[in-house]
Every structure is written in C-alpha cells, then in structure tokens.
Amino acid sequence: MPIPDEPKIYHIVHIDRLASIVEDGCLWCDAKMATRASSGTTIGMMSVKHRRLTNVLNSHPSLCVGDCVPFYFCPRSSMLYVIYKANHPELEYRGGQDPIVHLEADLRRTVAWAERNKRRWAFATSNASSNYFDDYADLADLDNVNWEAVQATDWQGCKDGKQAEFLLEASFPWEMVSRIGVNSQGMYAKVLRALHGVRHRPTVEVRPDWYY
Image (cartoon, rainbow, N blue to C red; front, side):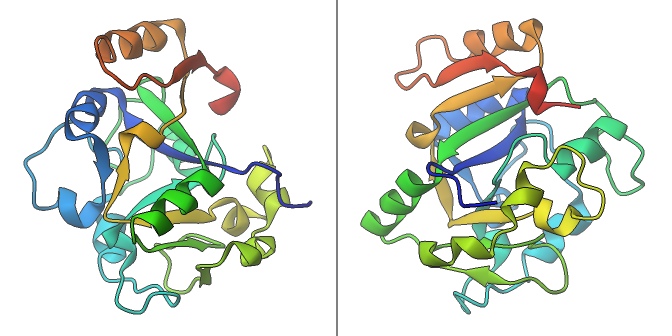
C-alpha cells in the first residue's frame, strides 16, 4: 500500500484530560507528566511508560521515547483494543473505550512545525515500547512504515506494523489538533462542553468506526 497523500496522526486520551490539555496549550510527554500532579485518568500501562523513559531513539541518540509525545498513524489502535477488552493484567484503567477521545493532526504539518521550532521528531515502524524497533527522522523513509498494517481493521499477523508511531519531542501544541473523534453522542456533547469558550476548537465528530 502506498504512503497516504496526507497522512494523519492520532493520540488517545481520557476525556477528563481535555481540560488540562487545553489549559496548558499542549500535550506533554511522559517524562514531563511524571513530574506533575495527576490531571486526569491515565489509560496507559505504567510498566510500558517506564520502559519508554529509557528506550533510546536510534535517529536521535540523546532522546528517549518517553521524552516525546506519541501518536499512532491510525485511529482504532491496538492499544484502544486493550482498553476495550479491559482484561490485560498490567492495565489499571477499566473504564472502557467510550470515554476515550482521539486527537487527530496532520503529519506533514506537524513535521513542518517541529522543524520551524527546532523540535526533534521521529517515527518508529513498530511499537517504540518494545526491546527493539526501527526509527527514522526523515519523511523520505515513510515507505518503511507498513501502511497496509496501519490501515488494517483485522490486524492479526501484522500487529507490529499496526503499532507504528510518530514521536514529537517534549510537547505537542493544542492548536495543531485539527479534529477530535468520539464514540458516542454523549461523548460528543461532553467534548463540546469542555471546549466551550476555547480559542482553538477542533472539529468534533462522532466516529464509531474509530472504535471497537
């Protein structure tokens, strides 16, 4: 499958984190979040987050994965499936997928912003939490991503490729979020309330196809 003309990137958060993200004007990396008081529900696995704090990027040897804000190249990620099943022994969160919102941004626009602002970025062709992964910091290498796996709805046999990630150093600006996808009308209403009066208001859509 060819590289999409306008590839998008997706970060998932619990809806109760939206207020702090908007207030801060950005998403923070895990390294920064570890130094802050809790500002909402954590949906990731702590063991994975800790491992990412020491996993070094080959493309930037002085930068760890946990120093970056992570994104998938697709909605309906394998991590969302873990949240949906709610039976993984290392996952403390058991609130299901409905309160989880997708924050979408444009990959090329994000890279352009990063380079203007001297922020390092990279992408990994598989899960950057694993013991081994390949990563790159040149868009010319995007063909190393398994785009067929990324777009697959049935990803048995191609889970590694499905978990490809984009990583942006330190923080991700709120104004770069172009769309928010939710699972239900109830969550749609809650997101609109959370964004009331906010200067930058991304498009909000009910997208059940982004969920399990």
